[in-house]
Amino acid sequence: MGRLSRLFGGFRSSKKSQEDHGEQARAAVDWIVAGLGNPGKEFAGSRHNTGYEVVNRLARAKQVEFGRRRFNGVTAETEISGQRVILVKPETYYNLSGDCVSALLGYFKVPAERLIVIHDELDLEPGRIRIKLGGGDAGNKGVRSIMQSLGTPGFIRVRVGIGKPPPGDEDHRHILRPVGRGPSDEMETAFERAAEAVEAIIGEGIGRAMGRFNQRS
Image (cartoon, rainbow, N blue to C red):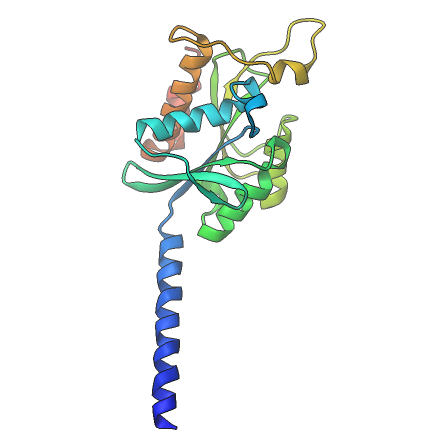
């Protein structure tokens, strides 16, 4: 009996050690940065995939690759200003982004205030960047999905302006059209600035980041 007790006691101890290690790994994540968009070649490069474009640039700057799939999203792990960050592109389609994002936050025990969501914004001029904490969804269904899944609006948004469609055009057609390409294109510049804004939020705090990036460029 003593031998069995020692045997199973060791098994329980080993299992508890593995669980503790898993808890430590989850607790080590400081921030989650979600870029909103739609998966699939037919949506690649569209205005609605602005969030994808920005996290792609963050990953490239940090020399990491998206590869691991978690909770219906593709992720990459990196470090920004000494803090561990998970970048994620939800693959649930834009309007259901909350399913992926809330599951990641729950698993890694990251509070909502350390979530940064990057998305396109019709109400901002093309190329403009605005950082926002909390507030309403302004009609953005991806942001609304995240708010509903988390049960709080208290997360950070990096809004990247794509502008209103021209007269006679429709919003849904406008957001699904591809953006221009080339180093002088205003949206390319906006993607880079939005990536810089994310780094500033994490490294300098949201107040200083808002002071830098919420100004007209």
